[in-house]
Length: 206
Image 1 (cartoon, helix red, strand yellow):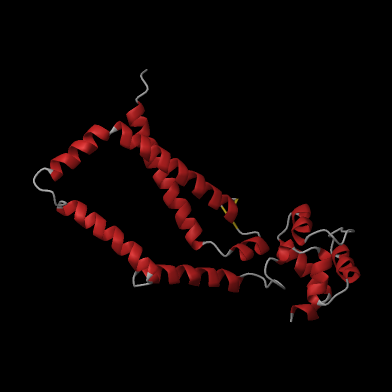
Image 2 (cartoon, rainbow, N blue to C red):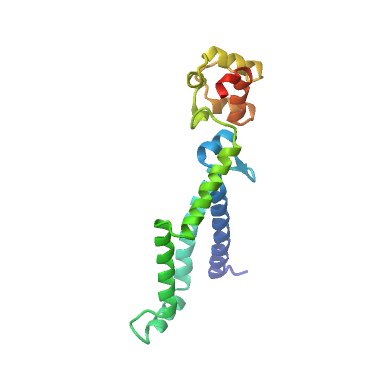
């Protein structure tokens, strides 16, 4: 059976476009990084960083496949351009509209003009929604804090933090252990580790 490279390239470009679009939509609606980390946010079993990695690598694949697709169809593409340019040196209507539309989208986005600014505002509102729904963190990126630093940030001694965690089943001895490390070791979100502390010291969460 003959492997049709040109057909394969077209199919691959279509599939890559679908995945690129889907991952872009997911990232548009994801919470901010600090919220995603604090709550262990996932979609279809993938974290925000997983979706970002997929989006970046698929975007690179899209560029490579697009280059091959143009190479395999260069004769048709160049013939089309020459046919359209032959009647006159000026751009044809299709090319002019394409250029203007692209420029409008870029300029409208940079200047926050509607509806482009509206799209950006919706993204900001989605991030704010996730932040309102998430358990409150004592500080941004608190999941990266060591237990010793966390204790200082909430006005407790490290002994009080360790005692609270141990009594809730989070066996921890080293104050240098981070909140995320404790969470990963016990299969919970960092916010749940903090909740175990505030259960014994509710005043720190006010």
